Image (cartoon, rainbow, N blue to C red; front, side, top):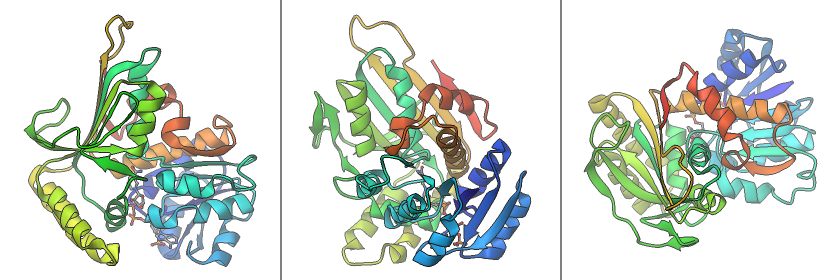
Length: 354
Ligand SMILES: NC(=O)c1ccc[n+]([C@@H]2O[C@H](COP(=O)([O-])OP(=O)(O)OC[C@H]3O[C@@H](n4cnc5c(N)ncnc54)[C@H](OP(=O)(O)O)[C@@H]3O)[C@@H](O)[C@H]2O)c1
């Protein structure tokens, strides 16, 4: 049995379709709105049934996980959920995959007495997720002199993802305006880029430096001399809405502040339509062997694309491609195998490695 939480959501709907289509086993689709979960279960191309579960209710969560080989959570906000569902999955003898969580969730679960036998993979989406995985294709067999990550576009924030965006502040998540240079985080190294044309992006964009902890691990793992990582926006609306909400956030409920972020993303979407671009560039060190220097991935729906990544991660865990332990998807999925899947995926508009 495969337990799937969040299957009625923007990410989970695609994850559910893909996991069912892989034919890996029957699905138990859980959520607070059991009627919506039943509709999803009935739409899947494989055996599935719905059950009511609130992940905040320990007894319901334990019953949901009971009998599962793996529990896959696309529910959120992931920086509140953290290791809650993972612990229930491990207690039921199941492995685990989560759409978010990052280091905060990984650290919370690391050292769990079952972590030596069971597998958990956090942050199996586009960002975090593909943003830390795909650039590794540009560093295979050669440490780059410089690696750049640009991710963003005009995607509508769901309320839960807006809450997550507001929760991901501080050194456990990243450092604004920082770059990775010479083996360490260099604060205040970069400035925002305004009105720049970047490959793959259909309009001039604003790129805000934010050196995520995922990018820091990428830098260390690839031994890149320099890594720059940018969140890309089509206007000033979202950076302004996020900054205003962060300024208010101390002591306030992020859910109450998320509305302004969602509205900013809707306004961008009305002006520019929906698009999402992941651009990675690598510059070689002198004398290094030749290889690809750029990856451009474009999609209309970043949430659905995250659902694809979740399904690939769940399959990798179920088929034994991921060793036991607590991992982040970017560090443990196979970049080549993932790229091969994405290249042919109908939800990916373009995937060009050049
Ligand atoms: N890594 C990435 O790249 C990435 C990309 C996109 C989104 N995300 C994250 O993924 C999460 C989901 O985003 P989304 O846009 O898909 O959200 P969404 O559309 O609002 O869907 C949320 C899903 O979670 C379920 N859920 C929420 N609270 C629950 C609870 N207490 N117990 C059980 N189920 C619960 C909901 O079902 P019920 O309401 O029926 O319970 C629903 O199916 C967010 O935290 C977001 O930040 C990550």
